[in-house]
Amino acid sequence: MKQVQVKAELVENEHEALNDFYNIYPKLFANKVLLALAERCLDEYPPTLANFETKQGEKARVVRSVVLRIDPEMFPKLWAFYKDLPFGSKTMVLVNVLNGYAQLAEADRSILEDAFWGSGNRPKPSPVESNVTALVKRQDQTRDAVLPDDRPVETKPAEAPPDKETEDVMGESDPLLDFVVQL
Image (cartoon, rainbow, N blue to C red; front, side, top):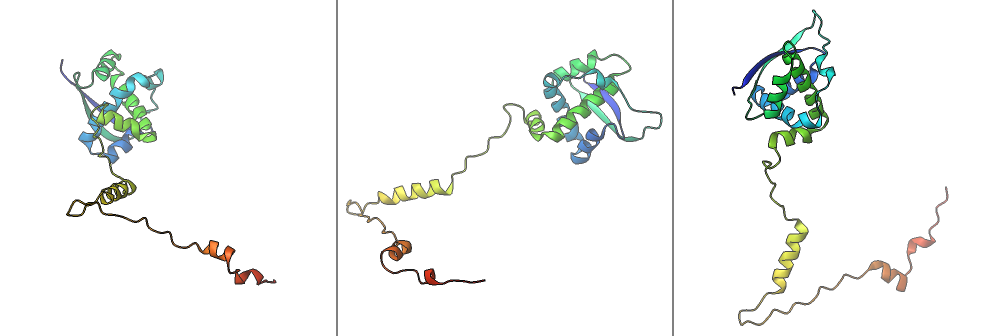
């Protein structure tokens, strides 16, 4: 099976999400991501009869022309959907469906990321060791230090600094307690 080339025109006030999509991303990247997005969303958000409707009149202003290539090996669901559409409405319905999916991607970027990266292709971030974990490990290493003659180094626990509140309660009184402010 050969790929299908779809030439479409995005119309003002009808395909705003798609137009914004093409304004944000480079054209070839936008095409690839948009088709991957449609492939991912077809089952979860199936097209409806509303996709067959158009608000285009004779005075509709074309904002952008786009060319999409649907490869049956890369996008089998989208290919089957496009092939099953009736003649005379294929391009219009496809553009309306893609516009709806672009609106979904605007609302939730994770859908777009999942579509682009796929389920298993997402790069895994490297685990970052927290400062606390690194400090605890360092303290454990120094605690087990050994002198050159194989005697363990004796460490004394650090003494806590004296608590000022405890001293105040036990000994001196606070000099500001007797101070009265009148307004």
